Amino acid sequence: MAWSPLRFSKKHKGKTLPQVLFNDPDWFFWAYEDEKLFNDSPPVLRREADMLYAKARSIRIPQAGSEPRLVEYAFYPGTQKFCGFEIVEENRPSHEGSTATHRSRHIDMSIPRRQADYDKLGCKILVDELKHLFFGDSGTRMTKQRCEAFFDDAANFERNG
Image (tube, rainbow, N blue to C red; front, top):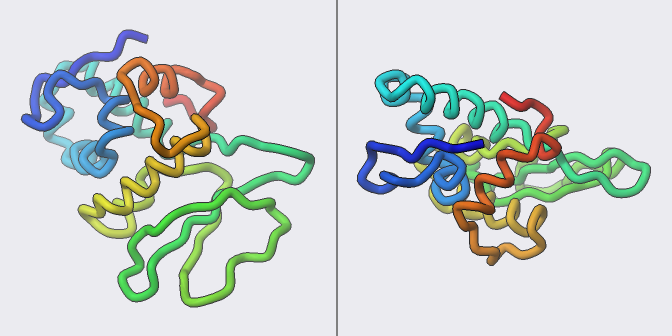
């Protein structure tokens, strides 16, 4: 797919939305929730934002073996901000302890923002763990091509927009 570069935002001008999602998911979800921002954009950009919003909230968990796997999100005690996720077998007992957890059948990149507005650290942790899970290394450099290829691959998502 040919992704449209942003024509607004000092920080992200010239980037495509897949790049923004891997570099600053908090900003993407904030911008998406501010309906005026994408509604005042060219219609093609609004369609891309709608599609990516659905995809980024329904990333398919890579399965291995016969037991279905889930994502288990963890949240810091006290603040309840996002502190990481782990892919676990469905039959594994839930985490016990002071760290709150939540399980899901798909990975949702909006979790840190839904837990706490402006959680840049939580978003960085989530992106690093996604890079490790899908690219083998949390230090993987997310080029424009790599970001766009990830979101172009329908096999990565439960919903495709």
